[in-house]
Length: 297
Image (cartoon, rainbow, N blue to C red; front, top):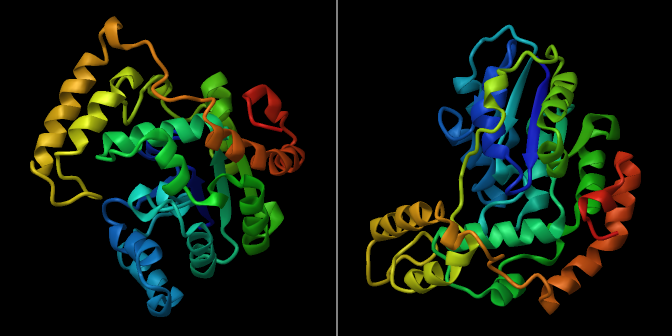
């Protein structure tokens, strides 16, 4: 069966696709990299460079692969694009090179989100998961320079998989018209349009707390252990209790206002300025007017 690789940048509805969309498609075999294929994912993401072996990774994949006679196999994980914040969102090149070595000729689908909104959403996730850095410090020290260089990534993917095997999607399209967006995925996968369950529209995964509560969460993170700060005063389960409380408060109108961060921050402006030339080339590659989606062009 053909293999499709879903490279979703962070905060682009990847979890929704993994939990709601891919498993609902008839004839599509979704390979869950967080459950039965976890060891395969670890081999792709975490194995040291000198220890990585594509044949071992493929053997690990085939160890649990079901003999399915469907249309195709789909693998999806945000860490295909880059590992999470505790690894500095780096190793983008390593992930796509390893996957292309394991699955030569696979078809790769990438989902992007405009860089300003993505940076803000990533910071809110960073704080929710235990980070205590300020917005400015996060921009300076937690995101590598090239993370938002989308066109350079597309070029590398085209080199590895072939230009005709690289498909680009935009998160803003999903927000604008989720029905059309999901049907275009069906077209790519060879599944019938509208074969997915309509009831999944509007279902949200990884709901965040109100941005106006970010200051309080940052303060509590200074005292509560987390994955990237392991030896603080209170154990990690205190953080889960705080998250549940803040999520409950987020439903109150009192806390809904506010952006949580300064979108006019000078460091963010520099990041966005560096994205303009690449975004113009990405718009030409995809045939989409990215200005309407607030991409800096």
